[in-house]
Length: 580
Ligand code: AMP
Ligand code: MG
Image (cartoon, helix red, strand yellow):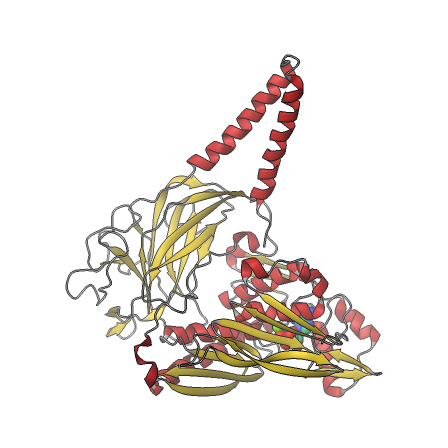
C-alpha cells in the first residue's frame, strides 16, 4: 500500500497551526509586525486553498443514471442525452433498457435508479461497446478521486452473433474499464477496472482514480481480453454513476511508476459477496461433485455442491480450461509460455492482462516484504531444481552467477502498452509462488459465472472455498498445527468464503551436509532456505494467500512491520521448529 498523502498533508497543516498559535501567543504581547502579518496571511491563504480544493473540485457526470428512451441501439442511432458512442466503426450502439414487455433482447431487469440504464456488450468478433462524455471539469493529475457506479450482469441478452449471424445469448460475464483522456473516446489512461461482473443484481462498485494526466473526457468500456478459450459474447449493465469527488489525497503524478502501483485499477467493494445470488430453497437436493485434473504441475481439484450434475460438470470443465490457459501464461517449465518468452527476450509489449495483474501484485508483495518475495528468482530456481533432480549441491560460483540476475527492482512495467522490461541480463521470472493461487481465483470466477457458490478449489495446496456445504459450518480443511522435533501435526478447521495456503519445506527439500535446503529461495543470498518454518495464510483471494505465504517463509521480521490484517484481512500464522 502506498502511504496516503493526506496524512502527510494533515500533519503539515497541524504543525503550521501549532507553530502559528505558539507564535501568536507570544506576539500578542507585542504588536504584529510586518513579517508576522505576512506569515499570517500566507497561512490563511494556504488553509483557504486547501479548504476550497476539498469543497469545489467535485466533478459531475451529465445524465449519470443513463436516462433515455428504451430500445436497441442501432448503427448511427441516438444515445441517451449527454453520452457519446465510442464503439467500433460499423457496429451498433449500446442499448437502453428496460423496454416495457419483453424488453430489448430479453433484458427486463428494473433500473437501479430512475427509469432506464445502459447495457454494454463485448462480441466474439472482439469489438466492445463503450460510452463516454466530457467531464464538467477536468480531473487533475496528481489528485486522487473516488467514484462509484452500479453494475449488474444480465443472464439473458439475446442478440445476433457476429460470426454465425444467428441469435445467441450474450451471456458471459465481463469487466468494466474506465478510461481518461483528452478528447471524446480518448483512452489515454486506464483509471479503473472492475472484476468480472457476475452478479445478477445491482451492486455498487467503488473505484479510486489516480490520474497522471489531466483528464477531460471519460470513457466506460465493456471489456474482456484474450487469452480466453471461448469466443466471447458478454454483457454488463450500468446505472447510477456517482460524481467524481476528490478524496483529499494527492500523489506525485510525474513519478515513473516502475511497479505500476500509482495507476492501479479499481476495486469492487462487493464482487466477492457470496451471498448475492444464493437460493437456499433447495438445499436438500444438493449433491456433491468432485473433479480433478493434472494442471500447473499439480493436481487441481474442484468440489461443487449443486442440484444438477450437468451444470456442475460444465462449470468445472470451464474452470479447468481457464486454468489450462493460465498455465500457458505462467509455466516456467513450458518454454513456449508467455513468461518463458518474456524471460528469453528480456522484454515484451502488450502482455496479457493475466500476467499484468499477477506481476503487479507480485511487485507489490516484493516491495512490501523488502524483497523476501521476488519473482525474478527464476535463474536460481532453475539451478536449485537441477540440484534437486540430480541430488547434487550447486557450486558457489553457479549460485553467485544466478544471484546476479535477481532483483525485482529491475523489472519495469509500463501501463501505456502493457510493456514489461527485465533490466538485468539473464533474469528469469518464476511465478511458482503466486500463479497457482491466482489460477484458483480464476477457476472460481468461472464457477461463479455458472451460478455456483458452494465450491472448494484446491490447486495443489492453494485452496479457496465458497459457501459452507449443506448442514456444515464450513469446509473441513487440514491445516498445520504444531511443529515439534521435526514432526508436523495437523488439525481440522472449518472454513468458508476464504482462501488458505500453506508454504514451507515439508515436502520439497534437498539435504546436504546435514542441512535441509528448501525449494523456497532467499533472494538475498541465493540459497534455499534452511530454517524449518511452516506458514499458513488465510486471505480473501488465493493469490494473496499464496504470495504472502511464500514471502513469510523467507522473512517474517520484515512482514511484522506490514499491516496485512486490518486493512486487507490477510492472516499469517507461522510455525517454527521448537514452537509448541
Ligand atoms: P509456494 O509453494 O507457494 O511457497 O512457492 C514456492 C515456489 O515459489 C518455488 O518452487 C519457486 O518456484 C518460487 N520461489 C522460490 N523462492 C521464491 C521467492 N523468494 N520469491 C518468490 N517465489 C519464490
Ligand atoms: Mg506461495
